Image (tube, rainbow, N blue to C red; front, side, top):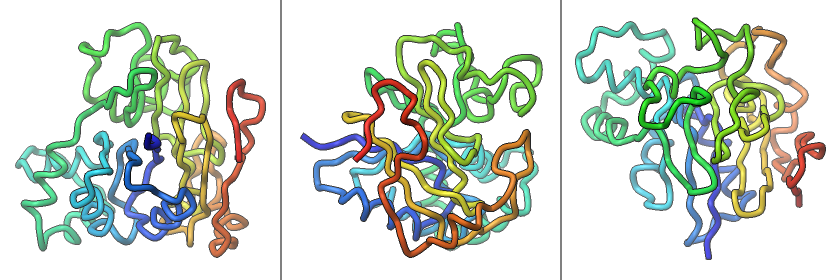
Length: 251
């Protein structure tokens, strides 16, 4: 029986995605699910989308950047960032194909014991009543959910399913009682991280380089992590500092 592999925010980092898949030794019966933000900021957005479109083993939930581009291509009055404009320009050569794929991405993928979503879910709110903005932009509880200041939603969530999410980069995976964050800032020079659902293993590879500038938000990912980027030729299975979390195993 194949494995289920959840991958953190890719952001167009196709080389690092290839490194991770090689490290995982992807098999024909494996299933790969991304937490969204497949594109924008990194250098090879087309290659990432082509892989997810052409290989049936790959699927993804929609991230906030993916959602913004599909809104833009639908003609909605949204304002694109510089990085989003650059990604749209890169994808223009086969725009209809890429737009159709982005439109097909769901907000959640239910794995039974786990639920994949880009940003998170509001604790105590049924899934059917979750707002699209929360599922793609939520970080903290309160009146301004995208804010990095406040109580993280994953520290409050106590639902039945374990939430696997991305969106909020940090040097190590974020974790709550029933939630695991997999965005380890690859596009900023950190790492690209995968989680094997059946064995609760983490596998990560270092970024080849920092493709965009450092994040300086709430003490998280304060630099492009040059020490990690310098090891770009040494992808490895990494315990990434989670030994205190019960049930996690490493190989």
